[in-house]
Length: 308
Figure 1 (cartoon, rainbow, N blue to C red):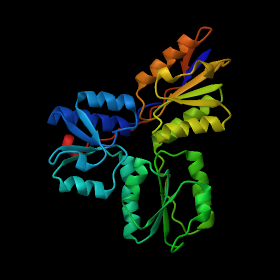
Figure 2 (cartoon, rainbow, N blue to C red; figure 1 turned 180 degrees about the vertical axis):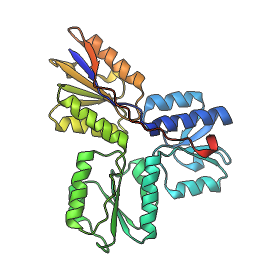
Figure 3 (cartoon, rainbow, N blue to C red; figure 1 turned 60 degrees about the horizontal axis):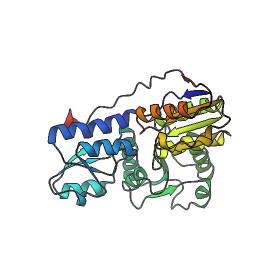
Figure 4 (cartoon, rainbow, N blue to C red; figure 1 turned 60 degrees about the vertical axis):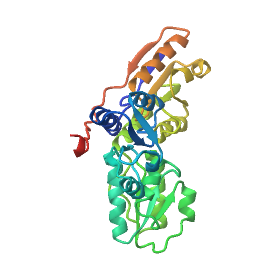
């Protein structure tokens, strides 16, 4: 059996930056350091940081007045920032710069008194943060059906942004449908879907051309990991989301000549290595491990000015 590793896979620049921010804050300020929401959607990462002294909360009110409070990579609504400032908390913003770009675009559109369509998944923490930047002006669209039933005040003053971790193909279908229904809508100049999400989806497409099964290492809460599973499944390949090696079901690889392995943007490489070890243990015959060609994503994000 062949195990084929995707490239790129795993941590993106925004996740690397967010984790580094928490680690530097712990060194500089000592523990506890409070983090609003899980810094990234991965249990392994969160537990490692918790062991070092990070405390994860959902509301600034859950952290003491004057405490150090870090915003997660997913971003927050302005109301969350205001609540933290009102409690005198030292804010360190680990929001991914690509999410910040969407927030700034949303604010610009709101200042122009435009209605804004946000393509994304209801309840996702990134979506909640973006919606909070233009309350009363935003419409959340999740599907083609939502586009068909969308009602706006002025179709000629309509703009659009997207969640950064969506499926490239599905989002393009929704954007095309929005343009057909509202010809004057201002779509994003460039898709808001981040480079890492797109690159990992492209790599999965390559896996599906050679593999019988694709395993995606990631958390159930991880939007980009779930999109990788959906993408592989739509290609006719059996695909499964696994949090770690212990979740790999032996029946999944029965009769498979090639198993593809990738990881969402918030999954560390150690979890991928453990999944490969598990596959080697489960395989009836010998296992040959290979990988798609390396991809240099060429992306590094600066730390916040307060930590440089």
